[in-house]
Amino acid sequence: MTGSGLRARRQARLILFTACFVVAFEALLFIAAPGSCMCPMISEPPPLVPWLIPAIGVGAQALGLAWMIRIYRVDPEAHASHWRFERF
Image (cartoon, rainbow, N blue to C red; front, side, top):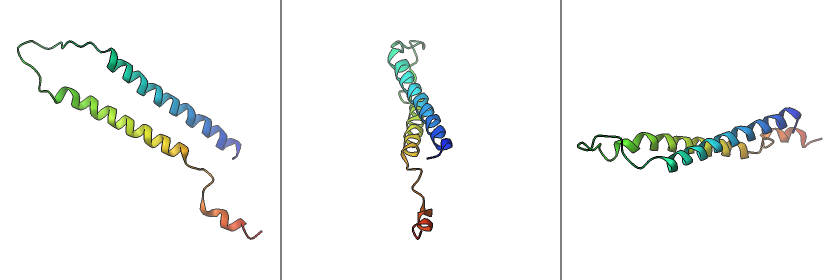
């Protein structure tokens, strides 16, 4: 790998660390959330609606993190141009 490839690899590690930190911080916020509801006692919200938007957000973030890890693990030298140099 060249110097720019190594620099990009370090940058990708930093981005992955940041993404993992954000996921861990969200888990901490979810665990530390108060258990009481701040809504009126008479009317209860529908059971699915309060959890739907955060669940979609966390699912999309987990999918993005998995995609980033997949991109990071790909071999950068695995391209099809090696056939040109096999003759020499």
